[in-house]
Length: 96
Image 1: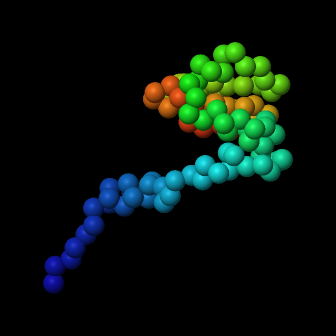
Image 2: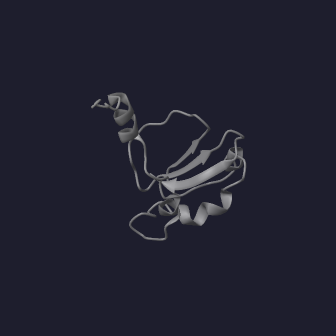
Image 3: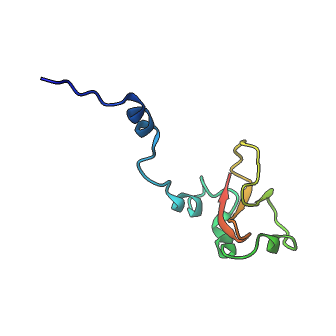
């Protein structure tokens, strides 16, 4: 009887894959613990150009993150983040 062996790289790669997409509803939560920056109040900016933030004033620190932009990995629940897609439109608003 012939023994069959599965290639080990196959298992290594499948172990790294995510089972599901991250839940984006956590970013829009109205929970005071996770919405310390007030991101829930700015969800109406989704779909607007990232440049629309240029004339706005905010009471919390803000990061406007362009597509493929480099940012620090520090986590600050009081900071408001606007992330843009490839076309330059805001695709996500969240605290962090």
